[in-house]
Length: 65
Image (cartoon, rainbow, N blue to C red; front, side, top):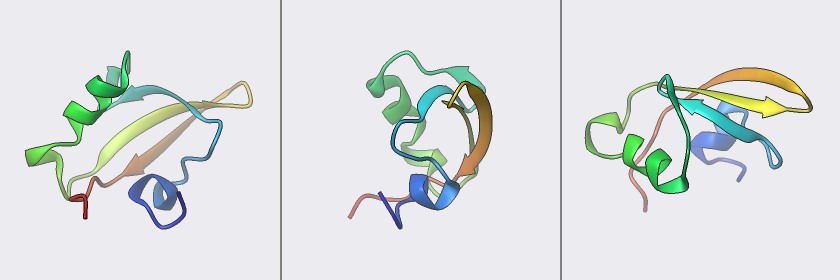
C-alpha cells in the first residue's frame, strides 16, 4: 500500500517475501511476530522474490493506527 512502511521500503504487489530479519518467512503470523514491540521504529531487512530476482529492502515497522 502506498505510504505504508512496506510501500516506502519498495515492496510491491506480487513480491514474495523470502526472509525478514534474516529469518525465513514461513507464515504471515511469523512475519507479524517480527514486527511487534521492540521492532517498532527499527530497521527490518527483508528479501523478496520479484520477477525471478532476489531484491533486498529495508523497512521500519510502525504502530498500527
